[in-house]
Length: 395
Length: 103
Image (tube, rainbow over all chains, first blue to last red; front, side, top):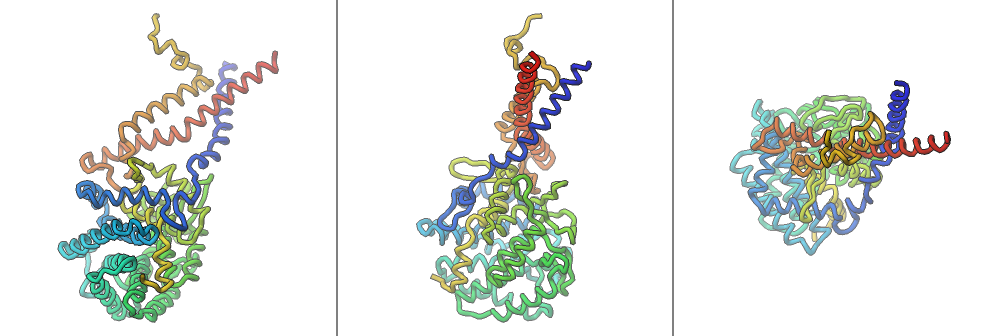
């Protein structure tokens, strides 16, 4: 009996020692040089493989339908956002890899045309979650800034790569309509859902306006500055200093700062106010970003403003408080601000827990979905488009 | 009692709980089961982690069930198997050291 107890204790001690050796080393298996994920020039291997899978989806309608339907069962927005992120990624890819520009432009046009057709044919509710129909939009006629902003940015991104005359009036129409509503709104706040307004959508819409200015010689700088001044004053959480993610039309906060929103917001702000963008990124990194045993991840909420899990946060893994939504979007923030340490650690987590599946030069993450992978693709390619807008060149 | 061919191999013979052999057997069993669920394509269902259905034809419940099985075996394979193997090596080395020092 004594010998048996001694053996079991020795076994347990060996297991503890082994765990203490293995767990801190585990990340070495999954950590790769950040250049595998994103490079300053050209396309990284990760970007090429992710893009190959997405391009295939747009050449094989049956495959695309299956993927999109799987997402639409949970959230119709994901279908739309998957399109947006892919178009924005392809614009950056065309600037990084001019030899493949014709292929990328063809796919961008296909996505934009189909999205516009669906919006026209099915109405704006086709790409919104069902609760959009539950109440009336405060500002009439009803418009969703979520759709208008992202469509405008898709059109502008395509035209930044190469002019397409058919898209010029479509962009102008979309931007003018948004400007008109911004001017009509007492607080410069527009709805994405009935009396529900999102920081993400405002920043994307303003990016589209700025791009339109570069493309068409318009000037919306006064409106952009005015909106930024309002947002800094009214839409910032005083405790964390982070921008809140959703609010009503009179500026009353609905959700506080959220990881699933703020990382993209910091990226969007880079085009509008670089210093403010960096400040927001550093705050988000401090409040929401974490690295444990070499694995990077992000929380959905800062300690000062806890929230409840929802469709945007994704499931929250307890103990470490990891949010799938925030961690995925953190790639965009880390990539935008050249935070290589955080980016490499996030990529290690992705390879560890994202269940990558590679075949025929194509990559997808099984724990993700089309929109998640499109956002990752955007993180691997972003940069050239913003740089081109800032430089003020269109050719 | 006559033993089957596979039962004659040391790795398949009953081992004492938490002995080095027991740990290696458990590591081998987990690895084998993980290989099975991996080859069966259960990885495809892990999209449930972000709220996406693994398969429209199988539905939410079965997709989630297959995802949970895959994730459990994957984590066991990545976290537990190396720990079991390392612990077995540590035990073996410890026993050898103990035998040498007592002889």
